[in-house]
Image (cartoon, rainbow, N blue to C red):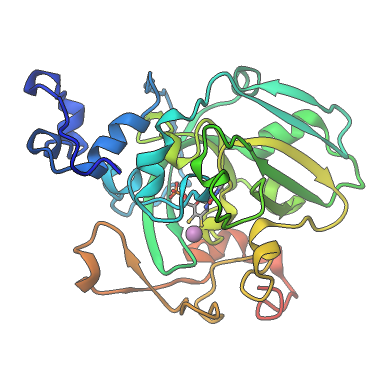
Amino acid sequence: MLIGKKPNILPSEITPRDIYLGRREVLAGIGAAGIGTIMSRPAAAAKLTSVKSPLSTTETATPLKDVSTYNNYYEFGTDKSDPAQAAGNFKPTPWSVEIGGMVAKPGTLTLEDIMKPVTLEERIYRMRCVEGWSMVIPWNGFALAELLKRVEPLGSAKFVAFETVVRPAEMPGQRGSFQPLPWPYREGLRLDEAMHPLTILATGLYGETLPNQNGAPLRLVVPWKYGFKGIKSIVRITLVDKMPETSWQLQNKNEYGFYSNVNPDVDHPRWSQATERRIGEGGLLAKRRPTLKFNGYADQVASLYAGMDLKASY
Ligand SMILES: Nc1nc2c(c(=O)[nH]1)N[C@H]1C(S)=C(S)[C@@H](COP(=O)(O)O)O[C@H]1N2
Ligand SMILES: [Mo]
């Protein structure tokens, strides 16, 4: 924790961007979260050029300050403020991803290899965490399908398994005596879900490279599923024929299903899924919003689940 430490920042060092991000508090020396944010920005938060996507929502985006300081990333701690404060030593460059399993062209691709042929888009998506809060995030990313097509999935491939990096030296949550999840963090999608045009790999948000706490350098975003499906800092993608194990199912199989589609009719044992609190909207007293089936993306994705009992397969 940085509380009590006096930040040594001159007014001249506060940039317009800091002000835009709401970092003025650092001047008063009270903004522990703000300091953490500065430290965990990538050393060179590069501007990204993205084309606007028609798949974006027109809802108001959640302020960057909230998007980058209210996070779930258990590799950096279990409190919402932990990732922004503890991810400063994480090194997202250089980076490579091993892509294999049931594909014709397996291999290890650097982030540059992955990015070279893709068109980066701005996708403003509604995001809904199973804990009952939501945000609207302007991601910069590209369709996961673009990458999967390049490695040529075999006919036998039915699911896609993802893994996050394991780096206890850089991730304090992986070296404490309390380990909240089995590492590596693992997630999975059915192949048709992974190929859906709404499913993206994000490399940025708000037009800049991803903050470490949001999953730099590369993370999954699946807007009709609960937030935990959006695995961060991906190092391995494997095409398989059986439904893969996921970290949350391994931790508690009664609480988390493989599909995890946002569904106001199916409650989690500890949290109602009927309504949600939009982060950045007036705190705990703000009126909760009704949660929408498939997080409002039913027109695009409901057909993927035709004939399935969504209460049994939650
Ligand atoms: N590796 C990893 N990925 C993760 C998590 C995590 O703990 N570790 N938390 C998930 C959860 S529960 C949520 S809600 C989203 C939050 O993403 P955000 O911080 O960018 O909003 O990340 C998901 N991806
Ligand atoms: Mo979540």
